[in-house]
Length: 151
Image (cartoon, rainbow, N blue to C red; front, side, top):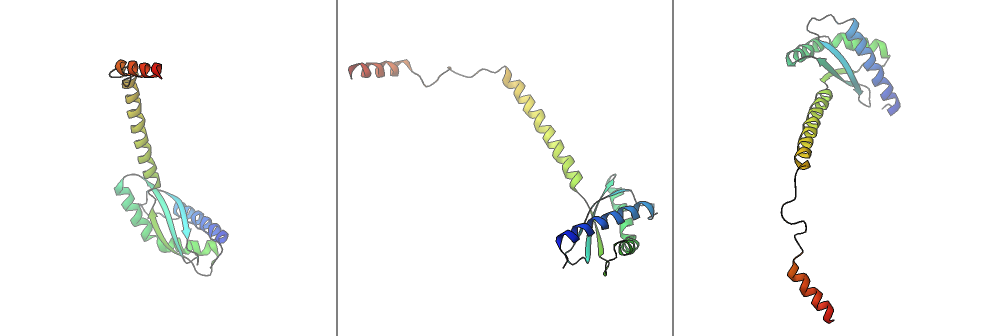
């Protein structure tokens, strides 16, 4: 088992090697605009999970996933040459949903801001219903004042 600092260093190195290899060496026409966002290695350094994003719709994502899967052997060879590890890690490519989730959260926050602004505009000209102090009744106050005077 490797220590955590070595795992982090190797993860960064694997991410850099894969990103450069995809940019310069993979010539598959199915490959879209890929950004390698993260790489995570297991503690024994034998498996790497590579997260990536693709610019485009679902069809482009599917084609890019197929292109990465077909180039997995070449990419793994490049990782082996670039890291110098005794055992080259096996690679698993996973589409990173974080940017999509962040975009969705931004849209939800914008809708909430718009709803708050609309509610604020409606409340600006509103007046309370009923009396200003609905709990004060003149008959009760007179009875309390008389009781205080007698005591």
